[in-house]
Length: 349
Image 1 (cartoon, rainbow, N blue to C red):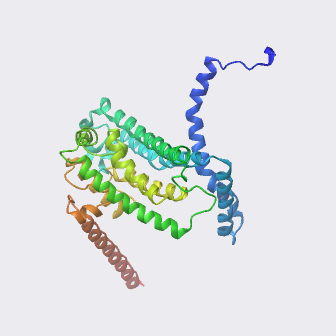
Image 2: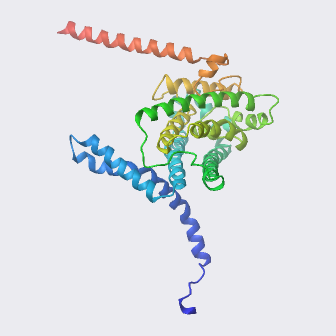
Image 3: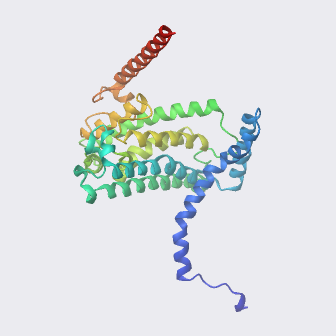
């Protein structure tokens, strides 16, 4: 019988499993994320007039298969990890590499020039704090995913409640997605403003020195700095305002992943430091307020968008009203330029 007894894994086997574990984790996250629309992208284009209907059909079948074949906690956490990797960690790391590879060009499109470069003299150069910012930022992202998993596990396995997020084969309707996204983002703005102002910038708060010594030690923000902070202030300032709305309104897990993707894109561009952004009104205004908050020592601009700051009178620099006015003037100028070109074309004819 001893001939058929399985032997214990050797030290080399265990080391190989340890080396493979990050790859398996990332691959599992990608499988969860990309398994949903993969069949639609591959098969639907072959059907012309029925493409939309078949897209929804394949989406539903693939999603149902995924939910029924995988543990709910795995679907939620690996999807969350994949969203954070694709929409924050990878783009922010790409911006960091771009800033480091071509600093002269990058400084030209930075709002504050050389000071906003990760390897600038103000940041300590190549031997500065950039490595700490990168490690802490990515570590905080992983900390948030772990804490989310702990909450989900506590709901179902410890307290035997229903799951924290809705994980079912039933897909959320467009109106339900829009409603949850609207109230989730609004509550996030309120929570961020309140916790940021009164818990991280209050002289009586025990967390204020940590927040000041970590995030506010940076001379100017860059994308990896969006999640760079002491773990205590980070959980209160970034994780809690992002996750709590989804918990309170019990988002469908697909809605939560859309919501998290929007938040991740906002964080990536708002802290990028670039003056060339996809949306001058939305992302441009958010970025200017975040830069002002970090560089002015936290004297105002405590919210994400500036809505609560506008209502409470704590805006520093150009506020939400100025952004709306500037956007309206820019659109009016574009409209006039287009009208002038049309008139010139008619005169030539």
